[in-house]
Length: 109
Image (cartoon, rainbow, N blue to C red; front, side, top):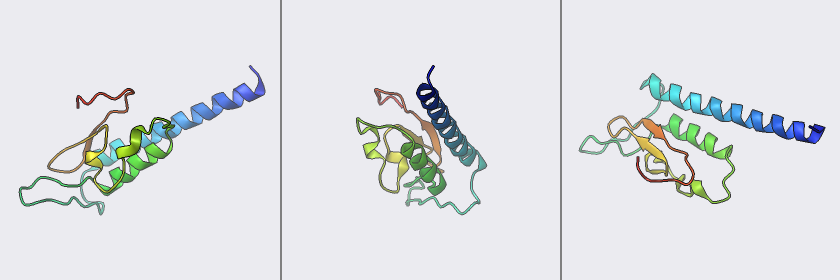
């Protein structure tokens, strides 16, 4: 393997490590629960209308590290990450419960 190929391999491993760290951060954030300044906006019926801010930021960090030539993450805008493509949330707490980054995406969450 040439030096250029080796660097490319290292870059890929580095990006994979960053992605895994971001996913771990998201999971830890989900498990810690409330009490760290996050807010869940609740409507009259008690159903969450917004995701946790720290989890939204973690998802956006994951998005920023992804190569997206087909604009797969086009729905990842705005405050409510629970409505984003591939993201499922608990309707009561607003915590992200599932992240589906399969490609091509099938909406069977």
